Structures are given as C-alpha cells and as structure tokens.
Length: 249
Image (cartoon, rainbow, N blue to C red):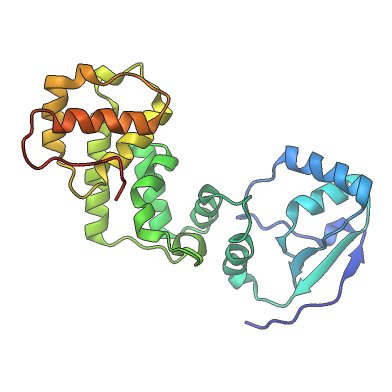
C-alpha cells in the first residue's frame, strides 16, 4: 500500500465522485447539519478519495457541499479499490460516528462469511444485533487497537459458534419466559446477555430457581437492577456456589 497523498484539489463537477456502496448509510439529518455549517463557515475539511475517485472519508460532507452548490475540496490517496474496506475501517476507527453496526453492515455487503453467519443467526432467531454484539464482544474487542470486527478479519471457530448458539438458546429461554412478558425489553435484554455470558452461569439452575422464585423479579428500566434481582433469585437458599453477576466477567 502506498502512502502518496495529493495536495488539496477542488471541483464542482460532482459526477466525478463515487459513493462506495458498502460504506455506511447516508444520514439526511447529518447532511442538513453540515449544509448549515458549510453555509456559515465554508467547506473546512476536504474529503478523501482514492485515485479512482471513490470517497473514502467525507461522503456526508460531499453530499452537503453538492446540495449547497459549492466546490468540493478533496485529497487523493493512492490506494487500490480492493484495499478500500481496510482503509475505511482505519479512518473510521477514531470516529465516534461509526458504530459496530456500520462495520457489520459493510462487511456483510462485502459477503464476509462470519458476518453473514451472524446476520443469519440474528434473523433466524429474531434477535437484535445489539444483543448479539454483547455475546461476542469478549472475542473481538481489543483495547487501543482496531478491532478485528471492524477491519474485516473477525472469525468464529466451530467451538465458538457452538457456544454462541447455546448462549442464544439460553437467552431465548429467559427473554420468552411468561413472567417477563411485560418487562422493559431493552434493560432486560442487556441484563440477560450479561448474565449468561458469565462463565459461572448454569442455565438449568437459573431456570429451576425462576420456576420457584421468579415472582421476586420485578420490572425496571435498569439493567443493573435486573442483574441484582436475577442474582438474588439464582443464589436463593443456596449455601454454597453462590455467584455474583453484578461484576460482569
């Protein structure tokens, strides 16, 4: 990969710029905000394109500038088209605007098998991707590094897939429990995901305890309070092998 970057160029010929189809979806509200900013302060930060004019960074700035009818300042970074996904992931790894879902969508569109597997799993079990991310986060999150999940090298071994599918089954057992039918689903989802990924969690024990004492679990908007209640029920009348779920491990 070369590192040649041009000086700033300018063009009002919007047709020369190309949107990368697997980049994240355009946000109209973001474009409106940038249109106001460009109207007041001008086009402050150039967009980044490769030599074939695919926009690597700045697709929202480009759209805002195009709608405002102004010249687009741009830098050309010499990089092959097939390396664009890696560059996009690196550029956006420092941006708070890119979520795990944005990376996930990009790699699914590029037909990366592990990402397609997770997408199918989510669709088949009607489980939100946010919940899936909680289960697999310990596999791919690395402090102060670009995550393999972001840069497209994320993998799942057969044993990890088996464990993930088992955990999803346990999750469904709990989330579909009739006792929790009217509970706050957002808080409950996260609480259950944190519970069952704890290495000391025993699903058969939890289900048995819920059958006996599940009425002691009340609705709340706090996942932390849900965890405390599940922990109390899980350990109720247990003299040994008590487990703390409050500190997620």
